[in-house]
Image (cartoon, rainbow, N blue to C red; front, side, top):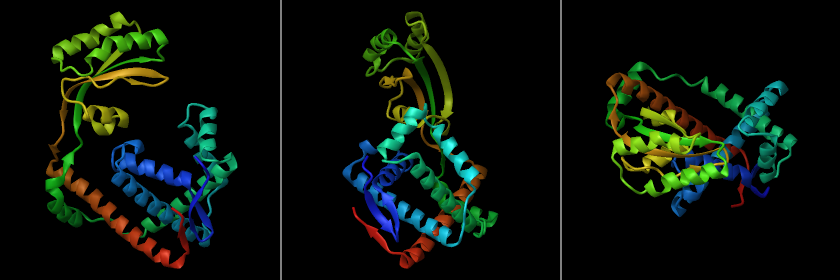
Length: 294
């Protein structure tokens, strides 16, 4: 990814790699898709949302710097170390930096600015009055018809950890022909449970009524795209090969009134914070010079 400047806020620059990362986050968190799965309209939306987020973040950083807000060097080092735990090893992290045209010092500086910005935003949030129970109850009445618990899934997972080439080949041979066939649960269960006798290190797990909040995003995406009684396509990485058999999915589960009022309080707090922060960003935009080069 080239280190290209796509925007400036005063003298603070925003790079193309930041935009790509922000678009990917928006795509996964909001649209529930990988970036390469978006339609042209969704891609435009992701880009617009990402650039607005980056400009807002930069505006907050500049305000924080102007106010003299600093973070301890030890805090920066700890957060960078924690971030590096997302990578398998130091080489993976070096690749991450190289793709963005960053040195370790430049990345550390970027992380420091992010922490300063977050410290400033947290100071702002503390000044906003919390949502009262009365406000949450009133908001609940307004949105209760839209409140549902996350979908729940019942399924089998069959997998091999660190498979060799022969195990990969045998696993694919055992399951590839079953991906597009609807199978009775008892028959599928027998296949799942018999697999270890065919491929020695194969493991299987049964997940009963598991909320999608408790599962890996890639697993959820595959299962939600699968009909009950079918296997998903085989999923393969360097570390494992796996397949899932979907027994059941329950999509719309009404919340109890007690649960609903708690969620209404959370939603209202988020809505209130977003409105206040967006309004503040609009004020800051008038104060700073913003240039966009897209």
